[in-house]
Image 1 (cartoon, one colour):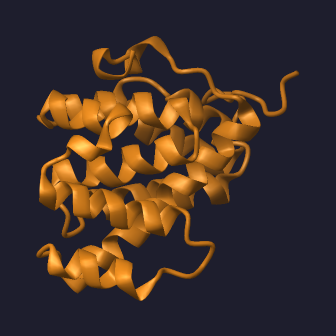
Image 2 (cartoon, rainbow, N blue to C red):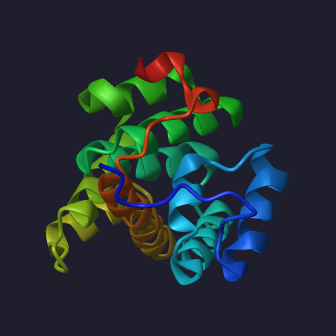
Length: 181
């Protein structure tokens, strides 16, 4: 059963068309997640804004991958895991780190493991992050700004993982990744 329409530039609501065009400009195609999200120009706009903000936050590429992939794994979103593994590979994140995030987070290097554990706490928080989780992240050398940027990344990915659960978004061939197959 199709729950949402997978929009194109022609079928999308007017408010989503420039946002879908920005996906074409950035990726070369409209990711299927965005095609479904286009039904709500407000959601697509908020998602893209949060994505851009998280992409320029205080966390580096590897750390952003930890937040994105961890959120995808915990929210059981194959699309997020595949897409962000593909993106991480293209951005130079070590394949061993990607593989660890997907299947063996206990093997992450200590600093990334601390970020993984904090991200896990944020994803599972239900609005309350334990003070021990905050203390552990700060003790691992992350800043208060890093901590708040994790919240931004988890919020951004939660928008898409919820959408993908409704749309049952398939992973397009462009995002297939050796690290997660």
